[in-house]
Length: 334
Image 1 (cartoon, one colour):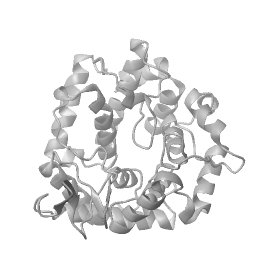
Image 2 (image 1 turned 90 degrees about the vertical axis):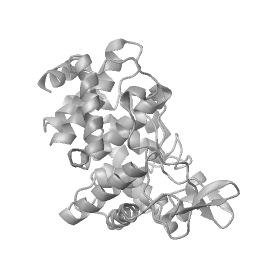
Image 3 (image 1 turned 90 degrees about the horizontal axis):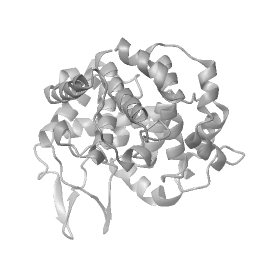
Image 4 (image 1 turned 135 degrees about the horizontal axis):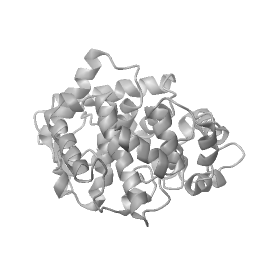
């Protein structure tokens, strides 16, 4: 790990250097902080903000506040950075009216039915910024735990689903976690009692047993809605069989699971971690496989992971992929 850290601190972009220093070495580099705001992607979203800090685009879209917060988090910006602070304050101030656009009606339905919608997304944004003390964050954490508890007791997919107009849909009363429940728990800590850890671990184990999951929708009267299940349909892939487009979701999923500190407790996840380590061994500790896909570069509420400006050079591609591999390894151990 020392070799990887040294290489990344020398060769990588400011965001990776800053995050290595902050998250791994416990240091804050003021000079690097100044460089972060020069990033093209960061500047793009800064340019969309109005004087209140808000972005007048569809909240749940590649141009909206949710994606902006993802970019700020991943690029390494501190929540104390004024435009980031203003955006979060405005998001909190708007209470139930923040989810303008495509999420407005659907998000409230998913929240009410227990699948995690607008309020779960909002809570995960604040948890990512380290603001888990908010009452609404704690409320959503409780709901996330309920989802994993429900899954842990699910005997089969057939017993919690039915069909409507040829589509597989969840039965009424079913609770099911999505990517936002996973992010929320991964970036918060107050809930981590032994009892709650067991609930999450049992839920993940059951999802693994049920994997790969079919596409399952949520039914609201006669409307079919897609829940936020991105990344959670298959918890037991074979890494050597992943397509380039599947690698980004896998890295994101595994980082969240590593932050939950459960990889070492679940055999299937440990196996995937070992597969990753074999791939890293091929590159003398670095991720050198030639994979590339728009999922890494197209930032949205779900996709986007590349911190380097592009992968036109082999070095920048290795930097990004080795950094993500490093995070999975590091948080699996600490």
